[in-house]
Amino acid sequence: YPIPSDFLLSVVIPAYNEAQTIARVITRVQKSPIKKELIIVNDGSTDNTWQILEAYYDQENIRIFNLEKNQGKGAALHKGFLEARGNVVIVQDADLEYDPGEYLKLLQPIIEGEADVVYGSRFSGKKQRVLYFWHYVGNKFLTLLSNIFTNLNLTDMETGYKVFRREVIQTIAPTLQERRFGIEPEITAKISKLPDIRIYEMPISYSGRTYKEGKKIGWKDGFRAIYSIVKYNVF
Image 1 (cartoon, one colour):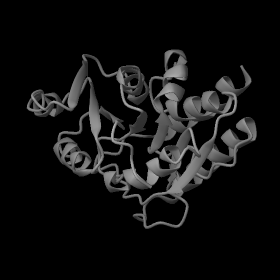
Image 2 (image 1 turned 45 degrees about the vertical axis):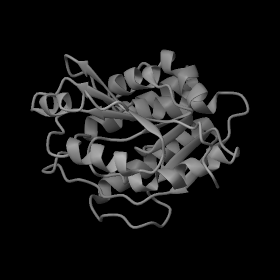
Image 3 (image 1 turned 120 degrees about the vertical axis):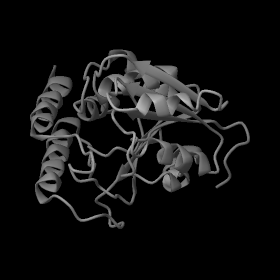
């Protein structure tokens, strides 16, 4: 399905201590054959992520923002969503767990006019790195709990690949409160309450990281996610 000539994709990249991967992620995103803007939000990194990003200031399709103190993924996404100018907004984590080569597939339901939001599902039969069983169980539990409250039948609520028509995400962006990983269930809860919203899932590949490789989410974030599911769906 052809992409319209005036189409622009906003790629929001939250980055915290990603010096090992941030340059490779930017290169991979830039290789995607879609007209795009990269909105990179440095979330108070304490390594040299910021120094690496400064080298990209002169690239015309990259905008870089710096949060002086680490506030969390949710805070970085909040900033990125409000700055987006494209027709569609996609979240791209600054590690290499998710493949920018899959943008075209994720965008297809929106470009064809079938969807307003697309979630990339890691549990729909594509290749993925085999890692932590309890993370898998936790993801499944949080998705089930979220679905109970939202009445959606998602398979992967916690996915890092979430794609939105810009009008949709900018409708809820000013109301987003979660600063860390609780942003995922909060977004899902608020999206589900929008009238006539059409949500699709597309299978994606996934190359998860170990904690040694820089993974940041922990058990405390799981409890916060449960809190967020209840808070933003019920109250």
